[in-house]
Figure 1: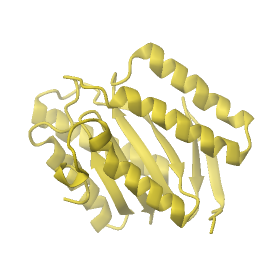
Figure 2: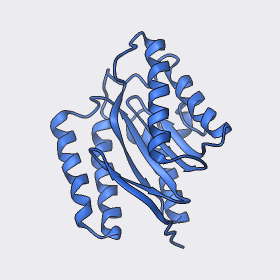
Figure 3: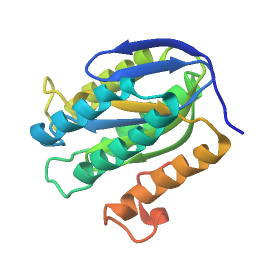
Figure 4: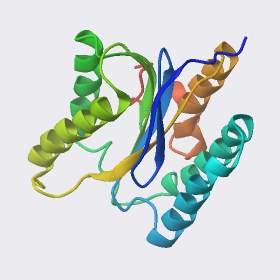
Length: 198
């Protein structure tokens, strides 16, 4: 059965974002400069063009855009720091802290070398405030840990959409689990130590 939660607000920074009541959000956050500027510009243009389509068409196009973005993010890169040293622990603690204090209910996540996938529902606050706070806090902690304080860690925005059905929930969970396999990092997702399954 399809869910059609009520849209609370719509806003645009460089990317469009919808706040939806009782939604399960699938959010991708990436490190700054993890996609080459020309490729990022083309992806952004496609995202901005989404408003010219119906809601059903937008859903299909957003999936295609996410896949294009993933092709870039899953390429090997020495710049990816999210799975190095204590960084995964910092991110896991930040996720768990928000889960424990009731900000969100995390359903599934994976930490990749240069990006994160998060699948969660919001219990209090807005997507904008939650993601901004999460990025700010993890950036400070990771900067201290890596000795890069003051440098920007995260790309300015995140890519998000909300799940419209239980069937789509399962597809998103499978997508998250398969990401380390698709990127060639492991043969079985359970071998990847930086996911909610571990």
